[in-house]
Length: 275
Image (cartoon, rainbow, N blue to C red):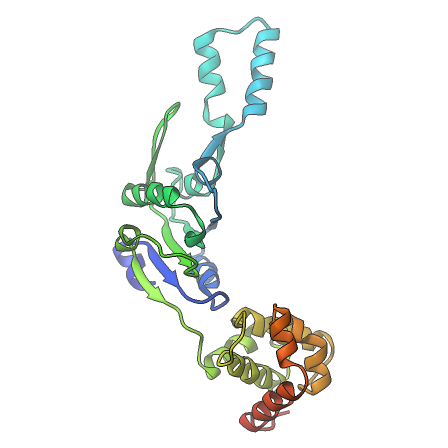
């Protein structure tokens, strides 16, 4: 993050789902006291949803008003209808708005879900931090944003885009680090409960699961147990709340019964008693 700020280069984050890639962007926006602008990528994402589009219903209404008031001059109408007041700014255009006095944090989330054509456009935009709008001209950032791209590796992102960025792989955290994260997010959980849940989730990540739980699931599980007034894990608590941490029927079925008791015993032996 320090180098991304100093070198003014995008940061490309890869890692399993739920390890905190998106949370890192939120944390950076908070630390820098600036706006977080998020573009959620998906298949079929186009410039109209990522950069800008014109507010056609309002333009049509304005055109009818001009016609009704007999003030429909072609050149005047064109200037009015294609002015900034009718422009809908999507995340990428918001991030490079030249009126910004301080850089925003631009999160381009799950770029691996977007189409390759959008990747190509993004490559060009990140090179110059500018966008050309035919009706208005070129919009260029006076304060380029801090760009963070994330990927869950559902497909490989082109090397050309990666070369524009600094790269960081985010792995699952160690037990101590994950426990610290949980205690920060769920401070009203008992030390024993937070440690037991963290130990079990760490154990689950070594198992053959359809969907491995991330840090966000650990936080959710502890929060759910606190909501049920649990101060420690037991077989009934696991059975009641396992759907918070595991999101596939096969995984849930595999954890019930003896397997849950085995994991609980290991967690108890790993965690020293605490109030």
